[in-house]
Length: 153
Length: 153
DNA sequence: CTATGTGCAAATCCTTTGCAATCCA
DNA sequence: TGGATTGCAAAGGATTTGCACATAG
Image (cartoon, rainbow over all chains, first blue to last red; front, side, top):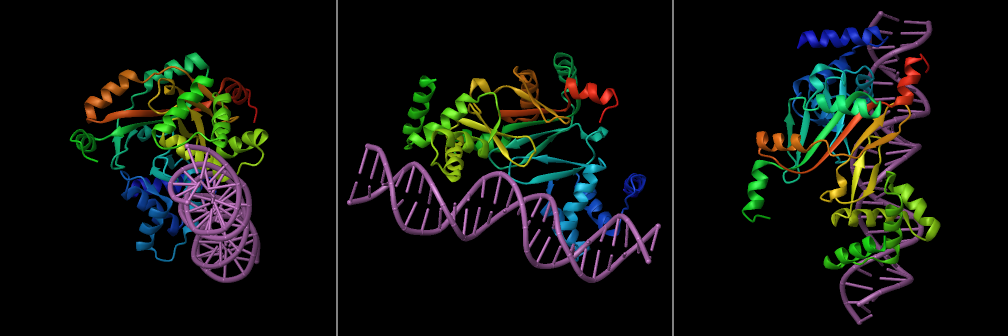
């Protein structure tokens, strides 16, 4: 993990910014919760456990900064708040998609990139240079589908 | 168009709701702008031209109602407001995707469903019952890509 | 007459911003 | 020291809600 932190620090330095203690705390929270999809407020609460005197505004400002530097990216599941994940849009790790359960709200990750050939087709058909994509499937997870089938609520 | 309106009216009636004059105005705006992606406020402004005394709250309440009845659906392009399109999630017309240009903000529609075989794969791999999907590609449209290539802003 | 629908203004929720204090190169 | 960073509180923008009135069946 230290390696990643160092890389981020370097990235920021290269852009006349610094990885301050506050920012490092925020970064650590993001790294320790790679699989979650934290909202700004959730990040704020987690950071407060380590550094009780951070302000929510700093969290927002830092997330904005990380986004600019392509260190993280944001996703929106339509619940009125943005969520953040470590890994920039251009990063190798970004190619996963989400299954959003309408029953229990669970988010399942699909860790393969399913879209490579699709991208090629779209690029050719529309002369559109793709830099990123976002794919969400909505529906019902195994458990919720079963509940529904049983005649549950 | 009248046919569609009648269908909506019937749909609402079946659920103990009515297609009031206000709501019909809103519905018409949606139908007349199928290809746009209107925000609540844009809809409000268009409706006001025909019915100057509607309130913004009514527009929001009506959109909420139409969503519940699967008459329209909403999309989010990450600009902080929801946008609405006629056609429910389950409707045949819903299977199109969007190319979002990071240069000029233009939204291009891809009117084919590119995801059918993908859906099948996901369903099998994750036991996830898919009811809807949302696919967005981000990047640069023909014009903006050209501008960038020329070294323009 | 009663329930539903509506306008208006106030309230809410998430996010951004202004400003004075703080920190670090 | 001087510009970058931060906390706090206020501001902002989109959406929701409370309430009294209007409307329709």
